[in-house]
Length: 124
Image (tube, rainbow, N blue to C red; front, side, top):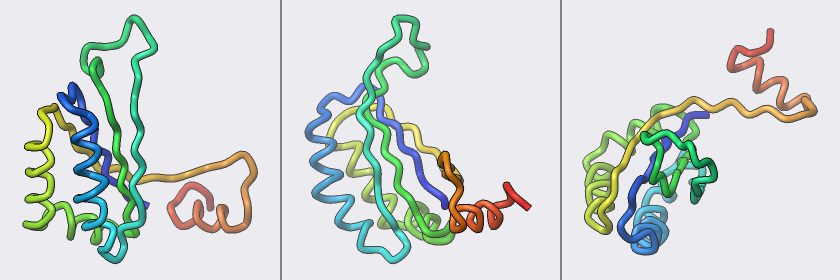
């Protein structure tokens, strides 16, 4: 599975940003075939020695896609670019954007999980 990882740092208005994503962006992108889901994680500092590069990190959003083609079709489209541009206007913040290939493991390997792992190259 492939996903985008968007990190929001030093958000001026967290509620306004989340409202915009939940009411505007998610209903639009989740209608696209192959866009599976989005996870939102609100992050809190717990270490007094946190690195300055991540200090002020507020929200991490991960949107999961069935394929890289689906992701590229959204991320690099005119509509996708316009949605992301609007998001930065809702609330000032620093945004970092990443793409990741995800592999999920659990304590007990089921037959389905073994097949999936074999497809992605972690098990022969």
